[in-house]
Length: 375
Image (cartoon, rainbow, N blue to C red):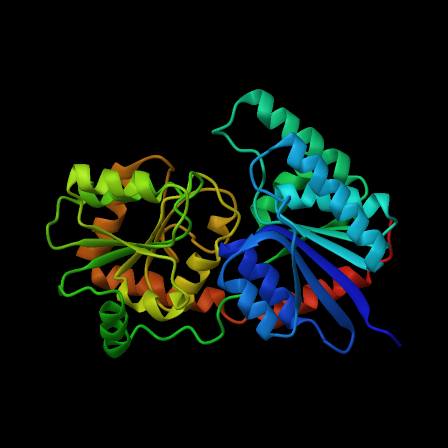
């Protein structure tokens, strides 16, 4: 019996969505599935995929911003690629690749079409017209989506509520965390701080994510300032299009924030943090938050989308509204000033994560989704 050919299509093979796509592909039985990752751009994940024996095809017309001419060309090129390669399954991730990939799969008669919603392409910070347009596009391609995998229950609820995909085809999944997240021991803490170049002994508030509008790094910087504590250092791990803007803000406000850039060793760096902060405007369920919780780090996050699946206020962490650096600072300061409560929340969070956020669990979900009969 020949292996099933899977095309995993993702616009940017990086950050949380890229990690989910990669770890999902790695978790599949190689005797049953042969995966090709098709992406417009990527970072170190390209090398990790190749090292795992997964084929990677870079299609440069598959770009993140809406660009009609490039999008039409990307659709044409994906259509030709699918027709030439004869994939049995096309599995798309995120909005742009989700739309173009599913359209191309439909045009070429791919037997199974699966899409993962890592979040939603529309949110409260957009204009009503743009939100309406995005919802209309999602409903159109949702009609021929055999299975929709939603990262977190809030994303699933919104997909069902908005009628983006027929409800019987919607499934909720988690994110696969690094299986060897180090414990936050004094030794691990010291190693992580040394690796980040931190020489002080004061508290560290950390964040992980792209320096992009969605992740809202400006609020993180302003929250560190609002703490009003000279002994606290903020650290942001990750790069992106807002790097220059955020660096200028740090310099202008003289904020004690370190931009650590892209790092391949994020799980090993997490023990440097005394509190993990997520300031995002909107999210699905971030891998970094789950890995921080698995590593025993207290978490403060914005109450958006599927984040409350794991960050339960007063039980496993603290939640604040987005765009409120004052409240983010207050919650972070509370955990720094009350270490026993912070430890209680971190212990409960670690127990909540358990074994449900693993590559093996995701692999089982993908296997079930790929086995569904087309509807």
